[in-house]
Image 1 (cartoon, one colour):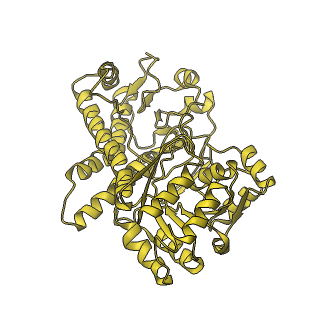
Image 2 (cartoon, rainbow, N blue to C red; image 1 turned 45 degrees about the vertical axis):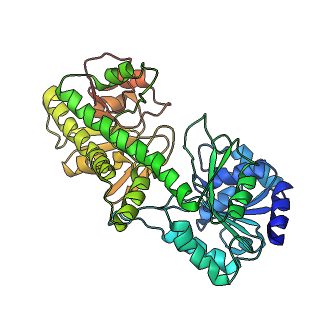
Image 3 (cartoon, rainbow, N blue to C red; image 1 turned 90 degrees about the horizontal axis):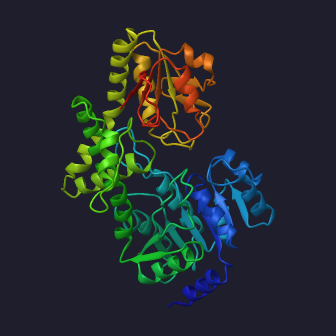
Length: 437
């Protein structure tokens, strides 16, 4: 172990290591909160001045983190926030948690990783541990970040340390969070991995060191590729079951009574969020560059992307068949526009595609979502409507697209004339005006 590694290891062990976390979104803020709660001094860095101002005031904008927790940590001078990269100069650990979206061509966009790495280079000094948590394609850490940092002429594994550890945040999940989800760590060198593992062991229940950064990078993509493929399968079966006059939801409940060899997945109006809809594309893209086509991913992607259009076609059919109305000029309200229940995240949400398609067909669209007060997205500019008996009665069709826990389903069923439930949230209701995916 080099001298700088020994010093850093002691700082981590004594919790005197100063941590900077670049990106204060759904991954970065919970991570900052976890490290600060365990006694580390943490600085959250984000170019969004609004986020930084809210952190400094102790106000949380992430559902899973309470404002009370942030306020306490800020007052204790354990948690700081900055729009500048200057805090990197005095940091012992830098963790990168920036977005990795797709560009307009649906190819990986790692520009935020590149920008963060350039900023780190400007402040890189001996004894720093750099960890990338942003989901990306196998090879990013060693092919993109390492060459940039080596411009400093510092030697990885000796002067500075570089790792990849995939984020595993599940927004809105009350049972699993940063501190009880096992961490996977892959380092450029064994010493890099050892230092990162010792850091995460301070806040998590379990840490697994793997042989390389590439292994760690691909492990994250495997997790979500597994999900996109199985969701694509169940979405296709849901459409087939409907034509066969079989209730797919009842089929799943029956199948999952088998105590082995089966894991339930559920159909829906489409997939959203960063993980399932985006991450597998990173793997598919990288594999294609290497001359290998991942057919399952491409097929699952297509099947899932068809679901919003299927929902719209079913809405047209439902209005025509049961209300004897055309979609044009019909009043259609969506309940829930975030990509999953009990969160405010609308990234890649299928509800947005459904709203745009309905609008394009001439429907008078509206939505209600207590987590999303307004939408500004492409051709959509809407504010969440209140959910009252009067407004429900005014709708020709109500489409339940996100099954938020807070929805008063009994009242919705009572006052809505026609409902299309894409989440099986109304499984306990048998009223004839409820249609199901």
